[in-house]
Length: 124
Image 1 (spheres, rainbow, N blue to C red):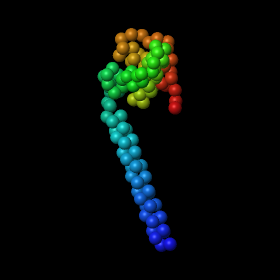
Image 2 (image 1 turned 90 degrees about the vertical axis):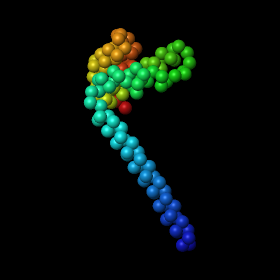
Image 3 (image 1 turned 45 degrees about the vertical axis):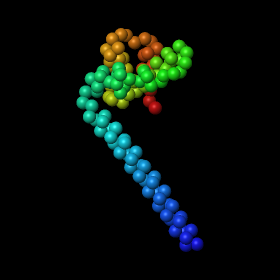
Image 4 (image 1 turned 180 degrees about the vertical axis):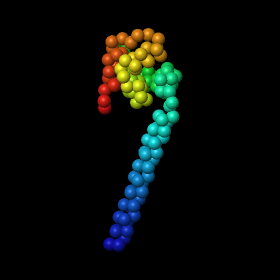
């Protein structure tokens, strides 16, 4: 009986220590993301620099979905993902986001692309 109780207590402690450490690791990851976000002094310039070929280039993220129509929808979804990231960096107004996108890509957005921006601006 004492052996069963000891084994139970030991297993409880092991499980508790294991999951307790994973919470600490998740916390430190979250904190490092916040610190990285706080380090960006000029989000507009950061977005311009990282949109094409950088950390904010989501065009290659959704590759391999088949036909032309599917690829176009994936392209629009990448715009929605980019919009969400831009909003997270502090630019929250639709007009400013569209203007920034048009500056980066040096062309006007289509109606479908603007709808994708709306999708990226929706709350979770």
